[in-house]
Image 1 (spheres, helix red, strand yellow):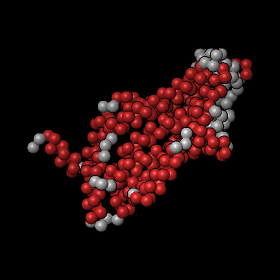
Image 2 (cartoon, helix red, strand yellow; image 1 turned 120 degrees about the vertical axis):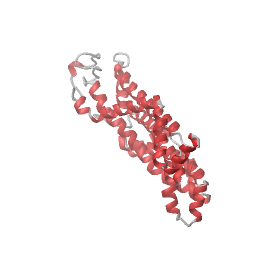
Image 3 (tube, one colour; image 1 turned 180 degrees about the vertical axis):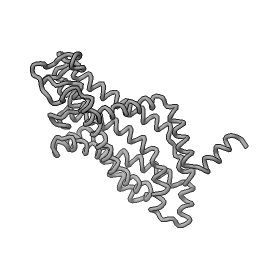
Image 4 (cartoon, one colour; image 1 turned 90 degrees about the vertical axis):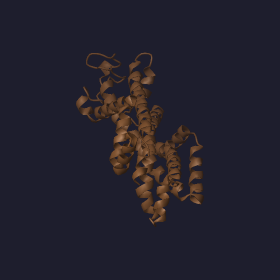
Length: 297
């Protein structure tokens, strides 16, 4: 018996362990994704430990020390009110990461179930859900977000709720396409033929096999949500003073670009690197994950 045949038998005998082992083996070879994951963990830990890492109170003003260049007591300089940029960036990371998590959470909550129903039920239900999805996707995302935030009022919660609603159609289409492919598999037909209830088929077979592309989409959506939050905060429709996100820090620093470029460079660099890390992690997950669960279904 060849080695590949032995691996095949082991994969069938222990599907969950084998799927996990195959994923870890593939993911360990995704060096950019590993670096991206490490960077995201580092950024998250820094945001959580902001009270311990901050050298100054992020809200403390010192009008005698405005727009100080990086160095000395202020590693990244001070802003137009004399506040320490380094400390504000640490606390702003909390808000930026939380905003991305809120938007993705809303998108998943609103998009996954309709996608499952549309993909598995098909016919008229599928047609109705997809026409609504197409209608939502026909609007320019940023214009729609500005309009909704203008009605609901400028705040981080409102902005991220709107961004989540805008991203939800992407999850609907992704889950629907995945479920359409899964429901034609032989193990789904076999499960139906022995009288398994629809609810059980979806919970035990369809959902586990649809998780892989969903995990990848969550990572990519987090990157888009962070950019969207930065855009809305730059327009004054996101987090409100005295709190700050990386996007709002850029908005305030943009007025002093010539005199104090560090006010926009540092938060802009943090946004760029974090978004890049999310995208690299998503690419690595996409290349490493597969619908391995189907073997054990």
